[in-house]
Length: 107
Length: 144
Image (cartoon, rainbow over all chains, first blue to last red):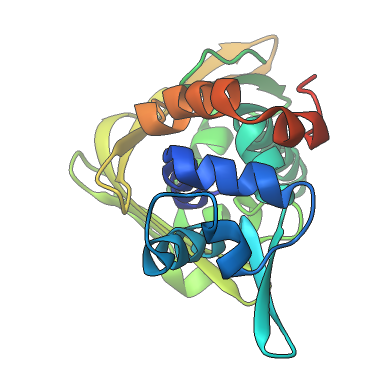
């Protein structure tokens, strides 16, 4: 089910070019923060902050592997965001199906 | 069903009198029974629907362990043909749901419009996708 504030969070996460570049690289394979930060002209903590924004939006999952955290891309929120109008329309359509059943049971 | 860039539109005919469809949207016990889409329920204790301008139109949906509150205000109400509910979103944007009911072929035609979804959601989508790297764009399903 598409929820408005989830979508806002995904698009806010995507609004930054560094974060889009991080996602682009993560679409190939997972990376540690250090590996992700290497090509950028910003500090490691700044890259960590970007990763946290992406993780909070559900776009990146972070797993601890030995001593290093690996960061992986989650495609599902991107698909939902890309198709949000269709998804919201589908949510409403399902809801109106239930309304139809409800009306048949009530009257 | 059609959709412009920022609003959802649906139109559906129900084999029920207009008063019954109106009641489904404006009576708390009824709303709780159908408002959740598949797999989603509504907490019946959470539903609050007023009958006048300025009244509340609120409920909380439950999807698994997740609770999703909707907190709306009735900004237009003309029983049994038009209901407009305005929701303030956590990010400060305003989303409006408009329900129009007309009698048609012995039943009721419902026209629903919801939006506008804020520019960061609609326009941001276009920017994000046009600027997404090739590899990222390649792994996403194309829109139908």
